[in-house]
Amino acid sequence: MNDRVSNSSAMTESSAAEIEIATRRLMAALDALESAVERRRDADRDENELAARIQALGADRSRLADELDGALVKARKLERTNREISDRLDSAIVTIRSVLDTGEDG
Image 1 (cartoon, rainbow, N blue to C red):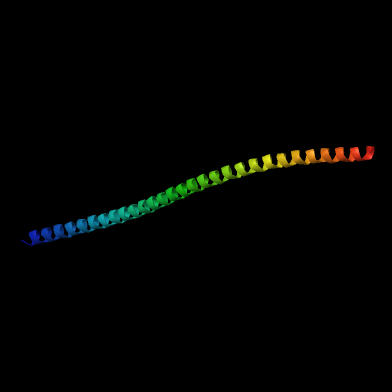
Image 2: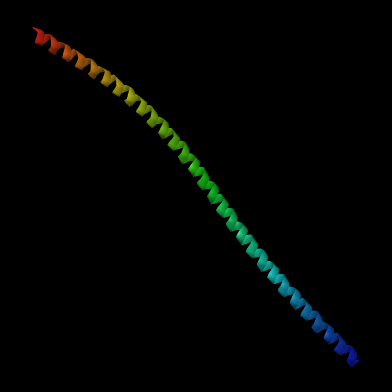
């Protein structure tokens, strides 16, 4: 009977050791899973921030394109006005020269 008790005791210690090893492996696996979930959460957060930045850049690009279009329209108007003023000045110079030339003849 002592053999049975010592055999049973040895099996219980062996089973307890196996359970302890399995428990440690399970805890390590759970820790690894928790770390993986946290890394994934961080990656998702970074991805969302990047998407928000890209959207903001797109909005800035659209705004800048609109501003550039407006600036081009203003520049064309200024060029047209500049040409008109230049033409008027040329006409005025011709008229003044004509008046001065007529005054010298008289």
